[in-house]
Image 1 (spheres, rainbow, N blue to C red):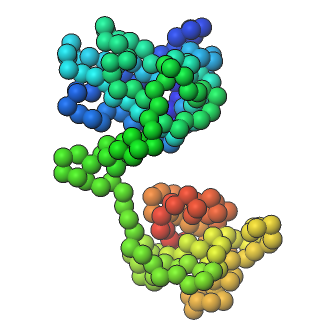
Image 2 (image 1 turned 90 degrees about the horizontal axis):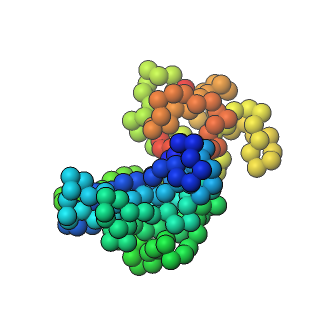
Image 3 (image 1 turned 90 degrees about the vertical axis):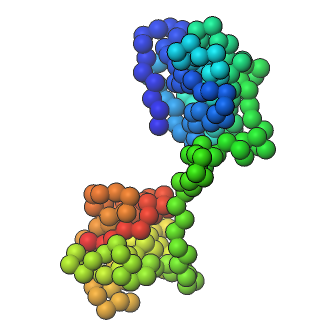
Length: 235
C-alpha cells in the first residue's frame, strides 16, 4: 500500500513518483498490484513527474502503475512536467488499474497487453545477471482432498513440540481449532489430524508461517494459507 499524505492544498498535494531514469535503462519505477490511498481531497495527487536529476539531458523517467487500486485523490491528468522536462517526453504509463482514481483519457497513456508482458516484476528485478526473484517451491505429491507437506521438511524441529513436520491443509481445509466454522459447518481439524497421525497436537495449536515471525492463532490460518504465506509449523 502507498499512502499519500495531504499538504492541505485544494489542488496539488504532491506526487507519488519522481523518476530519473536514463534512456539506456528501460526499467525505472514499477507499482504493481498495489493500493494507493490518501487523506487528501479528491483529484489533488499526481502519479508522478519526470526528474532530470543533476540536470541530466538523457534522463527520461520511466514509471508504470499497473493492476493497482487508485484512490479518489489521483488526478484525472496524473502526470506533470518537472524542471523543464515534459512528462510526455518521459515514459509514464498505466495498465489495467481500477478504483475511483482510475480512468482512461488522452492524458493517461495505457500499455497494451503485449507491451505489459515486457514490464513485469521479474523484468524489473532481473538485472544484468538475469536474477529471477520468484521462488518456486519443490512440487509436493498430492492426494485427493488432502495436502500435507512431507515430514521432517525442515520447518519443524523435534525440540519445538511440533508434529515433526509441517501441515498446511488437511482434507482440503486449512488447519483450524475446535469451534471454528469451515464452509459454514463446525469443524475440528486438529482432532481429525490427531486421529490420523501417531503424534498428537493440542487443540490450542498455533501456526507460524515461514514468512512471519510471530505465532498466529488457529483462526488466522484460513486467511494465511490461501494468501500463500508459505510453509510453517504448528506449535
